[in-house]
Image 1: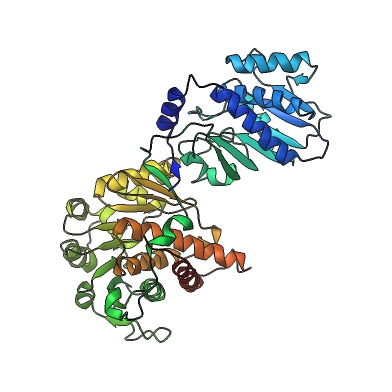
Image 2: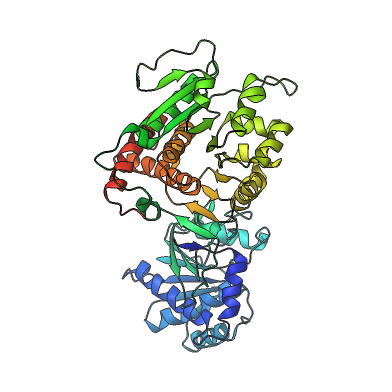
Length: 498
């Protein structure tokens, strides 16, 4: 699995290779120049290198020197206006100046570059972008040309993916030593563009806790089915939800579970006027809550509804959830089951103390905020941190959904998903994900793998639909479930299970 490094791990790598020869800055500058050459092509237009005041700017000076050696027209925008601190950058600047290169303090009005190399701000940014830099960020974004970001787009928090006031929209980001979480989740996913990793010859010691979640990682986890398989081999899933007016949420979860391989699916519907049969999918068994609780794996919450006031408690919260928490079987909590925990201290305590079976939580950012007693903005400002906190608080396997969904596990590991697109911004897709995860648990995947596989598959289904010209606007949850079946079978057909 491809590691993702938090900033303390990056700093440790930098310290371990501080005496390397050539230095890390020299290697970073050379790699940046090579990437810039590939992006600039043979247009003949100048390359604008923006060199900021820190080490990111030092990389930019070294890159500019290498670009001059390959006879590119280079203009360096010296933001700091003083000699850089690093020895390598000082030597590069002196060499550039001695060859008569163009070094400017402000963007020339007559300059129309073919490529911008963004070396303004780096991974050390922990506060809002200085007001003096904001016009330059805006100018880079408005230039209408490709932008190569050095290590991280300026203004983006490399640890969290949040924008510190304003951030460069890079076409491509060349990041050093390892992937950073901020490039992969939240707004960072959009600002980073295509992300390339240059290790600079420094190898992590294998202690990384974060990993990239992609189809290549999860595909081997499910093997093709044996010829003698029967439905009992693939478990029975119980889904409890579907209060009046929201029966469709439970049906979506159930249909997704059938499409993604559960042997049998039984719905315990909460609505007093629930249908006796799903005419679209009569394979679903629509029954009562007690029958659903007897299943091998449980999904709680799709369409369960919320109590009408803070002082009232529904039958679902009072009876169903405590009964489910007490069972020694895998449990997936989604939607209103998560809200019930957030608003009911007794349920919160019971869930955190649950030890008889594994727990999976699937909140979107607002639900994660309620569970953590934070604001949604605080969760979005540090999605990785929020997922880790939830996993620790509830001893659970957790996904905080959204752009670059973050999975976290009770043992401290975490992962960021690479699949998915705005097609999933549609009602019911979360119910589909819960059903998929339940189906994977029924097929024998361990909870951490069931969560990771389900999240990756869910996003890949949306990607597949868009690749076929369906959406992203207007894709429905039902379409995602159907496409997930096709993608799942393609993955299993090409897997070598392990």
